[in-house]
Length: 293
Ligand SMILES: Nc1ncnc2c1ncn2[C@@H]1O[C@H](COP(=O)(O)OP(=O)(O)OP(=O)(O)O)[C@@H](O)[C@H]1O
Image (cartoon, rainbow, N blue to C red; front, top):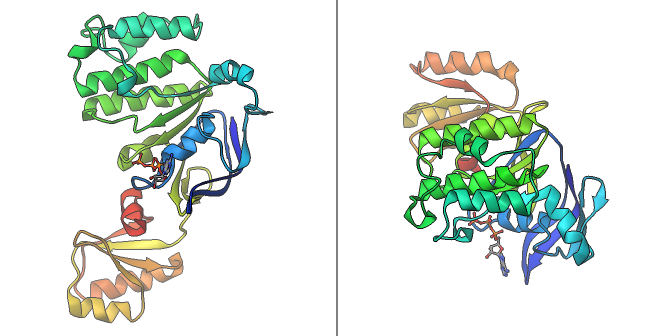
């Protein structure tokens, strides 16, 4: 587990993280969502001890990080950031990279062959990285982090450049690793995919982490939404006298109901106004994102 206590980071006048306290538990996937330039990498860099916050501390597995350089090796035995494609060596093969990571992290529990087969890399892993496509490199980066076998894994845009089949493949491995007890923290813009496997999802907004969904306790926003694909102006004006109406960037409109006791009345009103096509529920992550950012 990894805990942030009162972490604040600012760059000059720009406050990027504002007094964030948060516990990431063992055996969970936490998704972090925000537009570019909001602070996701800053937060991951603080957790990795690459960046010192102005205030606050990071506690990894119960002990404070990371005052002394001599403690760094210990730290990187338990926490890792998924390597970036720029960290790969073009003249080496994927297999060489995996062997190197296995030696560096002194891994005996996992074999290169098993990871290669789990990530379906056998047809290319012995070729030089310089010949790989974006998606092939991305899968190798993910494989390297799996090889490091740390109990806390940070992943920034893990699905970058992957086709749907590989997104699915990597999602399955993420779920398996979580079930082994790993703490997995993922910053991603692939919202539908993130929603599928994350136990908790937060928006990073104005330096704070705001809950979108905790699968144990529910949605951060308790309202119920009726999503209507097309709403004529006269009907919209009439309905907006009673309910807040929000327009998404598509043609869709959302009627927000403070609580479910209003649902029957609202749906009856829609039907009375000739609207029979609508859906009812909580906001999808993609819709919540559109509304916020
Ligand atoms: N070393 C730095 N010096 C000055 N400003 C910085 C520095 N690092 C980050 N910033 C600023 O802090 C803000 C957050 O940056 P950060 O890289 O954390 O965003 P992000 O959410 O990870 O973005 P992306 O999705 O594009 O990776 C940005 O406005 C960025 O310009």
